[in-house]
Length: 192
Image 1 (cartoon, rainbow, N blue to C red):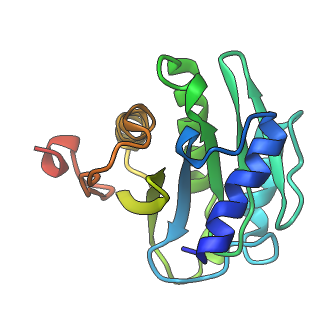
Image 2: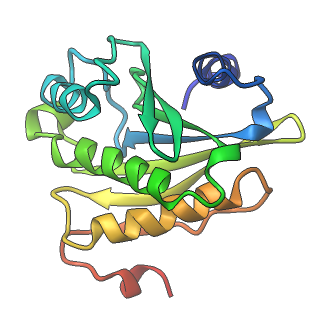
């Protein structure tokens, strides 16, 4: 999921856009990536990135291999475009009680997933959402959930729960509960 230098650089860029100190422990990074490695840039995901730029307007468009500051009523976060997969960088100071901000992040992830056409996603019919936390100078990447495409009806609800847990858990050490979402599954089948 990128080199250590690129992982820290995401925080530095987001901190500059959010006008916050670049203390890694104050940020959480959510990354969407194909279960099978593949490029996720503008050239490889043209339909998806076009839909994202429309969705984030007037906060965008996000440039290829660039980032954009996304404004919400309850706080701001940063969307970054990377070849390895889009990243959403959230400053923890605004997320602890902000259900509106969490909903905005879930909506953005859902737009990505709904617009990944067969051409954009290549041979991958499964995506992963990871949660990167920084604590004690260490980096931990946990897979929050794997999502089969096309999306099941209950996916937004499950994403809401998983993203809320990730942002509220913040930088505390520990493992995320892994889960797999498939079109025919129910939440209770994965999290029990």
